[in-house]
Image 1 (tube, rainbow, N blue to C red):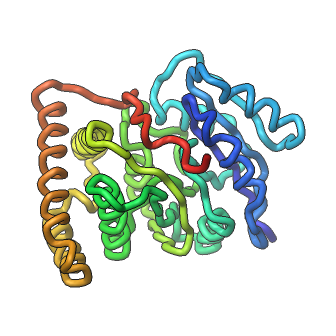
Image 2: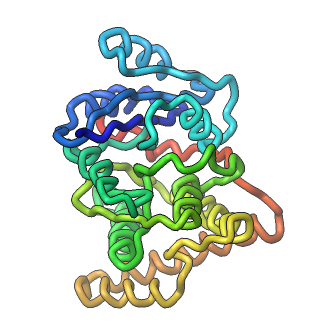
Length: 295
């Protein structure tokens, strides 16, 4: 018997990528999984996103569009999706990524094991790594992979059992909030590195700092409000994976040192925002250079 799933896509002004994403979902190679519906939640999009989805849905009846009049944060959009989804197995996808053709099959098939509550794949950036920011993007996702192999860390696109009515709408790190709830329910996380998710990292320094600063703030909020710490906040794990990276790529030591210093600076800014400014960026300023995974 096939596993049925509902897919949620979350978009704000994603006209450059939304059709590529919808077509990639339609082209998924499936055997044990059936996609029951694809729900796009568009939050106050002012570009052609909504029109593109409506047009696509005319020939693809499983695609549905829900719009939010104002941006209330991705977590709020996820809660809308969860309220409307038919299936108890859910897949959430950011509107600015592209899954490889077997990714949904791999993520959802994990639920054949009743102890698995959520699964995630391996984000792979499409950025060239020919400059320092490009190198930094690739480095951070390599470190994410190393961390996830030690302790599952899910991001960019995840699947999970609907064991909750929703997630905290004030969370700026929605995947981590889902992780926290799944673990609190006594279920396990599964990292599936073969489930590739193509994404695009920042292309310039201001966007890089903006993104990393927000994520640090969100992780501190998660510790305080949901009593959950992601593995990337564990210093011993960070030291261990950095040692592995240096051992495998000694020629990149200088660049790695610069990126580590930059990440430390971003975390300091995020900590300042959280502890001193009392800021919670659950409705965040978009990093424009991360859009258009495929052009």
